[in-house]
Amino acid sequence: MSRTSRTPRTPQTSRSPRTPHTSRTSRSPRSSRRAALLAVPAAVLLALIPSTASAYPNPGTVTGSTVVHDPTMIRTSAGRYLLYATGGGLSYRASTDRIAFSAGGDAFSTRPSWWSSYGTTEAWAPDISYQGGKYLMYYAVSTFGSNKSAIGLAGSSTGLPGYWTDYGTVYTSTTSSDYNAIDPNLFVDDDGKWWLSFGSWWTGIKMIRIDPATGKQLASDTARRSIASRPTGTKAVEAPYIVKRGGYYYLFASYDTCCAGTGSTYKVKVGRATAVTGPYYDKNGVAMTNNGGTAVLESHGSVIGPGGQSILHDTDGDLIVYHYYDGNDNGTPKLGINLLNWSSGWPVAY
Image 1 (tube, helix red, strand yellow):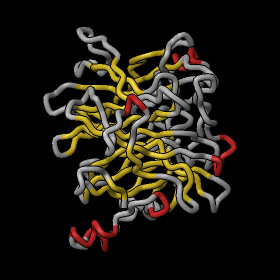
Image 2: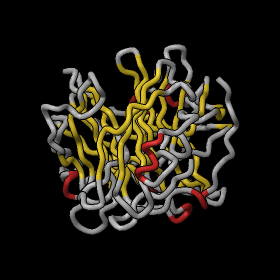
Image 3: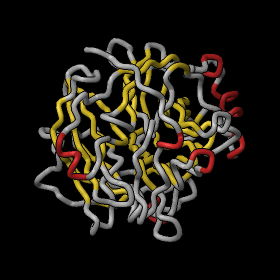
Protein backbone atom coordinates (compact mmCIF):
# COMPACT_ATOMS: atom_id res chain seq x y z
CA MET A 1 0.00 0.00 0.00
CA SER A 2 1.44 3.31 -1.01
CA ARG A 3 0.63 6.44 0.90
CA THR A 4 0.60 9.92 -0.48
CA SER A 5 0.71 13.09 1.51
CA ARG A 6 -2.49 15.12 1.23
CA THR A 7 -2.21 18.86 0.82
CA PRO A 8 -4.09 20.56 3.68
CA ARG A 9 -7.31 22.07 2.42
CA THR A 10 -8.18 25.63 3.25
CA PRO A 11 -11.35 27.17 4.70
CA GLN A 12 -12.08 28.62 1.27
CA THR A 13 -12.72 25.11 -0.06
CA SER A 14 -14.69 23.86 2.93
CA ARG A 15 -18.42 23.38 2.84
CA SER A 16 -20.83 26.29 2.83
CA PRO A 17 -23.85 26.67 5.15
CA ARG A 18 -26.73 24.44 4.12
CA THR A 19 -30.40 25.29 4.04
CA PRO A 20 -33.27 23.47 2.35
CA HIS A 21 -32.28 25.53 -0.68
CA THR A 22 -28.54 25.36 -0.12
CA SER A 23 -27.46 21.86 0.78
CA ARG A 24 -24.04 20.57 1.58
CA THR A 25 -21.30 21.93 -0.61
CA SER A 26 -18.02 20.27 -1.47
CA ARG A 27 -16.48 20.05 1.96
CA SER A 28 -12.83 20.13 2.71
CA PRO A 29 -11.19 18.43 5.56
CA ARG A 30 -15.63 18.13 7.79
CA SER A 31 -5.81 14.46 22.36
CA SER A 32 -4.24 14.32 24.81
CA ARG A 33 -5.69 11.98 27.43
CA ARG A 34 -5.65 14.64 30.07
CA ALA A 35 -4.21 12.19 32.53
CA ALA A 36 -4.23 14.69 35.35
CA LEU A 37 -7.99 15.15 35.09
CA LEU A 38 -8.57 11.45 34.94
CA ALA A 39 -6.69 11.00 38.18
CA VAL A 40 -8.86 13.55 40.01
CA PRO A 41 -11.57 12.14 42.32
CA ALA A 42 -15.06 12.21 40.82
CA ALA A 43 -16.41 14.85 43.20
CA VAL A 44 -13.62 17.23 42.32
CA LEU A 45 -13.98 16.45 38.64
CA LEU A 46 -17.66 17.37 38.71
CA ALA A 47 -16.76 20.72 40.17
CA LEU A 48 -14.52 21.33 37.18
CA ILE A 49 -17.13 20.46 34.58
CA PRO A 50 -18.25 23.52 32.60
CA SER A 51 -21.79 24.72 33.05
CA THR A 52 -21.85 27.67 30.66
CA ALA A 53 -21.00 28.14 27.01
CA SER A 54 -18.03 30.35 27.88
CA ALA A 55 -16.52 27.50 29.90
CA TYR A 56 -16.54 24.77 27.25
CA PRO A 57 -13.19 22.97 27.14
CA ASN A 58 -10.57 23.56 24.52
CA PRO A 59 -9.80 20.56 22.30
CA GLY A 60 -7.11 18.20 23.55
CA THR A 61 -3.68 18.55 22.00
CA VAL A 62 -3.30 17.10 18.52
CA THR A 63 -0.41 17.59 16.12
CA GLY A 64 0.57 16.84 12.55
CA SER A 65 -2.07 16.48 9.85
CA THR A 66 -5.10 17.86 11.67
CA VAL A 67 -7.00 19.81 8.99
CA VAL A 68 -10.21 17.76 8.73
CA HIS A 69 -13.99 17.97 8.34
CA ASP A 70 -16.54 15.50 9.80
CA PRO A 71 -14.03 13.09 11.33
CA THR A 72 -14.86 9.50 12.24
CA MET A 73 -12.29 7.49 14.17
CA ILE A 74 -11.79 3.91 15.32
CA ARG A 75 -9.14 2.19 17.44
CA THR A 76 -7.87 -1.10 16.05
CA SER A 77 -7.12 -4.16 18.19
CA ALA A 78 -3.44 -3.24 17.83
CA GLY A 79 -4.09 0.19 19.37
CA ARG A 80 -3.77 2.22 16.18
CA TYR A 81 -6.22 5.03 15.49
CA LEU A 82 -7.69 5.20 11.99
CA LEU A 83 -9.50 8.43 11.09
CA TYR A 84 -11.47 9.18 7.95
CA ALA A 85 -13.03 12.49 7.00
CA THR A 86 -14.86 14.44 4.31
CA GLY A 87 -13.06 15.14 1.04
CA GLY A 88 -11.76 13.37 -2.06
CA GLY A 89 -12.20 9.62 -1.89
CA LEU A 90 -12.57 10.02 1.92
CA SER A 91 -9.40 11.46 3.41
CA TYR A 92 -7.37 9.47 5.92
CA ARG A 93 -5.29 10.14 9.02
CA ALA A 94 -3.63 7.73 11.45
CA SER A 95 -2.15 7.95 14.94
CA THR A 96 -0.55 5.61 17.45
CA ASP A 97 -1.10 7.86 20.48
CA ARG A 98 -4.22 9.95 19.67
CA ILE A 99 -2.03 13.05 19.58
CA ALA A 100 0.25 12.95 16.53
CA PHE A 101 -1.67 12.34 13.29
CA SER A 102 -0.19 11.59 9.88
CA ALA A 103 -1.94 11.66 6.50
CA GLY A 104 -2.17 8.85 3.96
CA GLY A 105 -4.01 8.02 0.76
CA ASP A 106 -7.79 8.22 0.46
CA ALA A 107 -10.01 5.29 1.37
CA PHE A 108 -10.83 4.96 -2.33
CA SER A 109 -7.83 5.26 -4.61
CA THR A 110 -10.32 4.86 -7.48
CA ARG A 111 -13.62 6.53 -6.78
CA PRO A 112 -16.79 4.53 -7.48
CA SER A 113 -18.33 5.41 -10.83
CA TRP A 114 -21.85 5.76 -9.42
CA TRP A 115 -20.85 8.88 -7.50
CA SER A 116 -21.02 10.85 -10.75
CA SER A 117 -24.79 10.24 -10.86
CA TYR A 118 -24.93 12.68 -7.96
CA GLY A 119 -22.75 15.23 -9.67
CA THR A 120 -19.71 14.75 -7.47
CA THR A 121 -16.32 13.09 -7.36
CA GLU A 122 -15.83 13.36 -3.62
CA ALA A 123 -17.51 11.88 -0.56
CA TRP A 124 -18.59 13.38 2.75
CA ALA A 125 -19.18 12.54 6.39
CA PRO A 126 -17.93 8.94 6.73
CA ASP A 127 -18.93 6.67 9.62
CA ILE A 128 -16.55 3.80 10.40
CA SER A 129 -17.25 0.79 12.62
CA TYR A 130 -16.09 -2.81 13.04
CA GLN A 131 -18.81 -5.41 12.62
CA GLY A 132 -18.53 -9.18 12.28
CA GLY A 133 -14.78 -9.22 11.67
CA LYS A 134 -14.87 -6.47 9.05
CA TYR A 135 -14.62 -2.69 8.92
CA LEU A 136 -17.69 -0.97 7.51
CA MET A 137 -17.88 2.64 6.40
CA TYR A 138 -21.06 4.47 5.49
CA TYR A 139 -20.61 7.79 3.69
CA ALA A 140 -22.54 10.32 1.59
CA VAL A 141 -22.34 11.90 -1.86
CA SER A 142 -24.36 14.92 -2.94
CA THR A 143 -24.27 18.17 -4.88
CA PHE A 144 -24.29 21.83 -3.92
CA GLY A 145 -27.75 23.33 -3.52
CA SER A 146 -29.63 20.04 -3.87
CA ASN A 147 -30.88 17.16 -1.77
CA LYS A 148 -30.33 14.78 -4.63
CA SER A 149 -28.07 12.69 -2.40
CA ALA A 150 -27.05 9.15 -1.62
CA ILE A 151 -25.61 7.18 1.27
CA GLY A 152 -23.04 4.59 0.23
CA LEU A 153 -21.38 1.69 2.02
CA ALA A 154 -17.92 0.15 1.78
CA GLY A 155 -16.16 -2.71 3.56
CA SER A 156 -12.55 -3.59 4.35
CA SER A 157 -10.67 -6.36 6.12
CA THR A 158 -7.93 -3.94 7.21
CA GLY A 159 -9.62 -0.53 7.45
CA LEU A 160 -6.65 1.00 5.62
CA PRO A 161 -6.77 3.33 2.61
CA GLY A 162 -6.77 1.60 -0.75
CA TYR A 163 -8.29 -1.57 0.72
CA TRP A 164 -11.97 -0.68 0.65
CA THR A 165 -14.58 -2.43 -1.50
CA ASP A 166 -17.58 -0.31 -2.37
CA TYR A 167 -21.01 -1.92 -1.98
CA GLY A 168 -22.99 0.83 -3.72
CA THR A 169 -25.96 2.82 -2.49
CA VAL A 170 -27.84 2.21 0.74
CA TYR A 171 -30.41 5.01 0.72
CA THR A 172 -31.13 8.00 -1.50
CA SER A 173 -33.08 11.24 -1.65
CA THR A 174 -34.24 13.29 -4.62
CA THR A 175 -35.03 16.94 -5.18
CA SER A 176 -38.68 16.14 -4.40
CA SER A 177 -37.83 14.50 -1.04
CA ASP A 178 -38.49 16.29 2.24
CA TYR A 179 -35.23 14.93 3.69
CA ASN A 180 -31.57 14.73 2.69
CA ALA A 181 -29.76 11.37 2.58
CA ILE A 182 -26.37 12.43 3.97
CA ASP A 183 -24.50 12.22 7.30
CA PRO A 184 -25.07 8.50 8.02
CA ASN A 185 -24.42 6.79 11.35
CA LEU A 186 -24.77 3.07 12.07
CA PHE A 187 -25.94 1.97 15.52
CA VAL A 188 -26.01 -1.71 16.51
CA ASP A 189 -28.28 -2.36 19.48
CA ASP A 190 -27.81 -4.91 22.25
CA ASP A 191 -30.52 -7.08 20.69
CA GLY A 192 -28.55 -7.32 17.44
CA LYS A 193 -30.75 -4.95 15.45
CA TRP A 194 -28.99 -2.48 13.14
CA TRP A 195 -30.20 1.09 12.66
CA LEU A 196 -28.99 3.89 10.39
CA SER A 197 -29.65 7.51 11.27
CA PHE A 198 -28.98 10.29 8.79
CA GLY A 199 -30.13 13.70 7.64
CA SER A 200 -29.38 17.35 7.11
CA TRP A 201 -31.76 20.32 7.25
CA TRP A 202 -35.11 19.88 5.42
CA THR A 203 -37.34 17.91 7.85
CA GLY A 204 -34.43 16.79 10.00
CA ILE A 205 -32.90 13.54 11.18
CA LYS A 206 -34.30 10.23 9.95
CA MET A 207 -33.74 6.58 10.86
CA ILE A 208 -34.13 3.32 8.99
CA ARG A 209 -33.66 -0.34 9.90
CA ILE A 210 -30.62 -2.09 8.39
CA ASP A 211 -30.20 -5.75 7.47
CA PRO A 212 -26.99 -7.01 9.17
CA ALA A 213 -26.48 -9.49 6.33
CA THR A 214 -26.22 -6.79 3.67
CA GLY A 215 -25.62 -3.49 5.49
CA LYS A 216 -28.56 -2.10 3.52
CA GLN A 217 -32.19 -1.38 4.37
CA LEU A 218 -34.08 -4.32 5.84
CA ALA A 219 -36.64 -5.49 3.28
CA SER A 220 -39.20 -6.35 5.94
CA ASP A 221 -39.08 -2.89 7.55
CA THR A 222 -38.94 0.02 5.11
CA ALA A 223 -40.27 2.67 7.50
CA ARG A 224 -38.40 5.98 7.61
CA ARG A 225 -38.69 7.37 11.13
CA SER A 226 -38.15 10.98 12.24
CA ILE A 227 -36.04 11.41 15.38
CA ALA A 228 -34.99 15.09 15.37
CA SER A 229 -36.16 18.23 13.58
CA ARG A 230 -36.59 21.98 13.86
CA PRO A 231 -40.15 22.64 12.69
CA THR A 232 -39.95 26.36 13.43
CA GLY A 233 -37.22 28.81 12.56
CA THR A 234 -34.04 27.47 10.97
CA LYS A 235 -34.04 23.87 9.76
CA ALA A 236 -30.39 23.50 10.74
CA VAL A 237 -29.94 20.10 12.35
CA GLU A 238 -27.75 17.33 10.90
CA ALA A 239 -24.94 14.82 11.52
CA PRO A 240 -26.62 12.39 13.94
CA TYR A 241 -24.64 9.99 16.11
CA ILE A 242 -26.25 7.51 18.56
CA VAL A 243 -24.74 5.70 21.53
CA LYS A 244 -26.26 3.75 24.43
CA ARG A 245 -25.09 4.46 27.96
CA GLY A 246 -26.65 3.56 31.30
CA GLY A 247 -29.94 2.36 29.89
CA TYR A 248 -30.52 5.41 27.68
CA TYR A 249 -29.99 6.00 23.99
CA TYR A 250 -28.26 9.32 23.34
CA LEU A 251 -28.66 11.17 20.05
CA PHE A 252 -25.92 13.71 19.29
CA ALA A 253 -26.46 16.14 16.40
CA SER A 254 -24.93 19.29 14.95
CA TYR A 255 -27.04 22.45 14.93
CA ASP A 256 -26.93 25.77 13.06
CA THR A 257 -24.46 26.98 10.43
CA CYS A 258 -21.44 24.94 9.42
CA CYS A 259 -18.62 25.64 7.08
CA ALA A 260 -18.42 29.43 7.19
CA GLY A 261 -14.99 29.64 8.77
CA THR A 262 -14.96 32.15 11.61
CA GLY A 263 -18.60 32.94 10.78
CA SER A 264 -19.73 29.42 11.63
CA THR A 265 -22.31 28.97 14.39
CA TYR A 266 -22.21 25.15 14.49
CA LYS A 267 -22.70 23.49 17.87
CA VAL A 268 -23.24 19.96 19.21
CA LYS A 269 -26.42 19.11 21.13
CA VAL A 270 -27.80 15.91 22.59
CA GLY A 271 -31.04 14.30 23.71
CA ARG A 272 -31.84 10.91 25.18
CA ALA A 273 -34.54 8.25 24.91
CA THR A 274 -35.51 4.89 26.36
CA ALA A 275 -35.94 3.39 22.87
CA VAL A 276 -33.56 3.71 19.93
CA THR A 277 -36.33 5.09 17.70
CA GLY A 278 -37.17 7.77 20.26
CA PRO A 279 -38.76 9.99 21.28
CA TYR A 280 -35.58 11.83 22.27
CA TYR A 281 -35.78 14.64 24.83
CA ASP A 282 -33.23 17.15 26.05
CA LYS A 283 -32.34 17.85 29.67
CA ASN A 284 -35.29 20.25 29.97
CA GLY A 285 -37.76 17.74 28.58
CA VAL A 286 -38.08 19.36 25.14
CA ALA A 287 -38.48 16.87 22.30
CA MET A 288 -35.71 16.81 19.71
CA THR A 289 -38.46 16.73 17.08
CA ASN A 290 -39.49 20.16 18.38
CA ASN A 291 -36.23 22.14 18.38
CA GLY A 292 -34.92 20.42 21.52
CA GLY A 293 -31.30 19.63 22.37
CA THR A 294 -28.92 20.12 25.30
CA ALA A 295 -25.59 21.74 24.38
CA VAL A 296 -22.43 19.62 24.57
CA LEU A 297 -20.02 21.88 22.66
CA GLU A 298 -20.37 25.46 21.44
CA SER A 299 -18.09 28.19 20.16
CA HIS A 300 -15.73 29.67 22.73
CA GLY A 301 -12.62 31.76 22.31
CA SER A 302 -10.77 30.72 19.16
CA VAL A 303 -12.72 27.43 18.95
CA ILE A 304 -15.47 28.32 16.52
CA GLY A 305 -18.37 26.19 15.28
CA PRO A 306 -17.58 22.75 16.72
CA GLY A 307 -19.59 19.95 15.07
CA GLY A 308 -19.60 17.08 12.59
CA GLN A 309 -19.07 14.88 15.64
CA SER A 310 -18.64 11.18 16.25
CA ILE A 311 -18.20 9.22 19.48
CA LEU A 312 -15.47 6.66 20.15
CA HIS A 313 -15.27 4.45 23.22
CA ASP A 314 -11.57 4.23 24.07
CA THR A 315 -9.59 2.60 26.85
CA ASP A 316 -9.80 5.73 29.02
CA GLY A 317 -13.44 6.59 28.33
CA ASP A 318 -15.67 8.01 25.65
CA LEU A 319 -14.28 10.55 23.20
CA ILE A 320 -16.13 13.13 21.18
CA VAL A 321 -14.28 13.62 17.90
CA TYR A 322 -15.24 16.67 15.84
CA HIS A 323 -14.06 19.55 13.70
CA TYR A 324 -13.97 23.23 14.58
CA TYR A 325 -12.74 26.41 12.92
CA ASP A 326 -9.58 27.87 14.36
CA GLY A 327 -10.02 31.58 15.04
CA ASN A 328 -6.24 31.89 15.40
CA ASP A 329 -5.66 30.39 11.93
CA ASN A 330 -8.05 32.23 9.63
CA GLY A 331 -10.88 29.80 10.35
CA THR A 332 -9.06 26.68 9.14
CA PRO A 333 -11.04 23.52 10.01
CA LYS A 334 -9.18 21.50 12.65
CA LEU A 335 -9.53 18.20 14.47
CA GLY A 336 -10.95 18.38 17.99
CA ILE A 337 -10.93 15.56 20.56
CA ASN A 338 -12.31 15.68 24.11
CA LEU A 339 -13.29 13.13 26.72
CA LEU A 340 -16.90 12.85 27.91
CA ASN A 341 -18.08 12.53 31.51
CA TRP A 342 -21.44 10.77 32.01
CA SER A 343 -21.78 10.94 35.80
CA SER A 344 -24.76 13.32 35.67
CA GLY A 345 -26.62 11.12 33.20
CA TRP A 346 -25.74 13.55 30.41
CA PRO A 347 -22.51 13.80 28.40
CA VAL A 348 -20.24 16.65 29.45
CA ALA A 349 -17.06 17.35 27.49
CA TYR A 350 -13.83 17.99 29.37
